[in-house]
Length: 338
Image 1 (cartoon, rainbow, N blue to C red):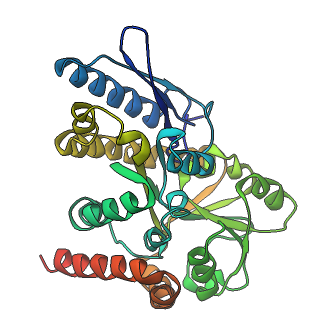
Image 2 (tube, rainbow, N blue to C red):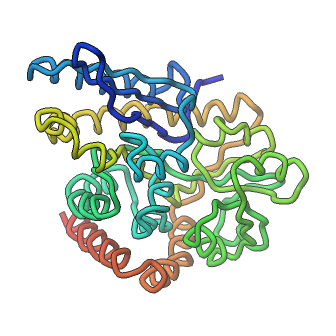
């Protein structure tokens, strides 16, 4: 079995000072050792300690793996309150504090990794940073959870019409609920801990999520098919508590938000995560789960049906959400015209 992680949940506890003046930073992740996230957080921590030393600062940075310091929903709130220094979470999780970020959950928003990277790194990063700052966070880095596909029992999702009447588990998000209603399915909002038993007991007959998450939650044990629909691209963020960040020495603030290292580390984390995609799809086959890739024509039909959700979001996503959607659409138009 490939060792995997559904999404980043990295936290750094409130700054403490050792007797010799060392700034002690605790880090934690839900990732087990050997995953891309564990490898990435280790690299980030070493870089920060090294840069701090060059600036005459003593920093000790230690990560605790496997969620030993909490899950992502809790850490978002703890971080906002300043009781945790940073948290790295899915865009959906940080959207509990910044609702406008639900825009990134919209179906068929991006067509490729390159489009997503361009929009996140070059179009909306500064605006996201401002919105997070207002909500009590400092944006440090953008990485990813990846592309959603469809895990199903009985029969696969190959055509837009295959969604009709399917009882599909969706995360507790209006965007996800509206998406699968638009596709003709019967979406059921459900928390992560309930899903495996719901699949086993036929309460639902499928779900939407990434291959990474599907294996990490053991949901793969209750499906026979996985369809590579790539209908949702989910980013992940590393943010700091503004309350915590504002108390740091200026030199350390600069190190944490250094754009040169941020971009380099972002690209590296995406590279490592994306490198797992094909091995994970192969792992489905090793577990007697058939992998399906719908045709481009059928994906286009799905996208056309789900487009109504983009229009609805302009109403329920708030002023900031509509503004972000405008920026994304304008950026995509520019990118696609090249």
